[in-house]
Length: 218
Length: 238
Image 1 (cartoon, rainbow over the protein chains, first blue to last red):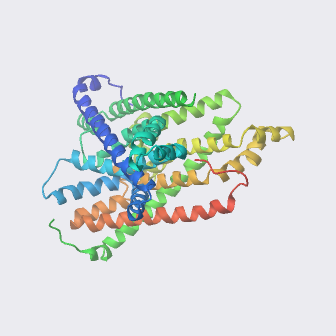
Image 2 (spheres, rainbow over the protein chains, first blue to last red):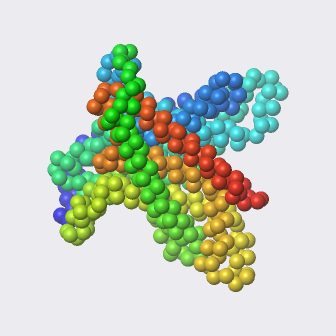
Image 3 (cartoon, rainbow over the protein chains, first blue to last red):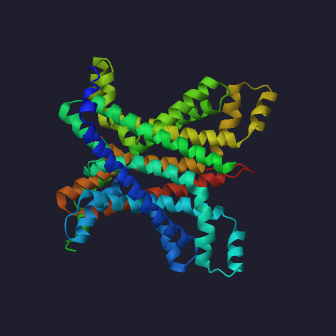
């Protein structure tokens, strides 16, 4: 093995940080989009609206049966075709992540809503709130409070999943590191560095999730 | 939208063959990786529930490391970095002389990664049984090893069939990551068809249908297995 060269990381730090920014931006936007769409899917599914609820369930099961890479390829191919003009890979990848992660978030949120006791809904209806109002002001706030640790865990998984944008060459953290690795023939240093950075962030996140979970249980 | 439909492309030579070959590699990769994940995951799950502090520590460390690094990065570490760290001869063997280097690396990488997830399922299965069964085993004079083999594991496996099924399906989906190091599995094949024919719609639809059908078939089959092997009085965990 050749000597480990720390300089390569130090010299390219600005470029790597730019990549890390893309990774974070993609993660944050996907989490927000995924939670919004996931909440809508969960609410529609729980409300038992004839065709819509079936569609929400089918959506979730369908996306959960597909590999994320395939969904990324799909949208990378479809989005420019539908818009009739080329768009940056960032946007097509973002759409892919939101659509895909919404299926997983929807299941988490559905479980969260089910964990709120049904008496709460009855109580809301009894004081004259409509069903949507009961959901909006009584059930969802409690459900989300209980779900924070699980939502965070899912965000960590999503953060790791964003590395798959590699397949369409979007310059995220991994792709930036890989470009340097190949240019300077320093694969060992770059990939070990990438692994350490991902590990530190995800490990810190999962410790936080665990602590939040404990606080909820006491 | 301007697009020339041609569904026939999927059944024309050589594309139909490509899809079948791709599916073949995907299934092969998934099954082999599952064997590693299941065996190693079970051993790690035993370690994490054992009475020895050292074993528990090793199990926990393994899980934390493999769970907190993206699978794609792990794949690159095994494929590009690992051979460099070995002595020269061994490194060359792993890189070139080993049969099907990319496929074998993908199997190991995905297997080792999923083992950390299987470990957590096995652990939760064993913990769901409570201490009563372990103590009962000790009371009738079984050794720790016998307690695991005859009491804890058989019962734990039966209650974690649903989460294990979803772990297997995760492997099935994650096997698509192997395309990044050059394994031409199902997703890679459809991408290739798109590049050759520009019929992306048809190609990706084919892959979508195949993945969904296999997933739902596995789920249906495992639900039957689960029904037949349910432990009376226990609700499945996970």
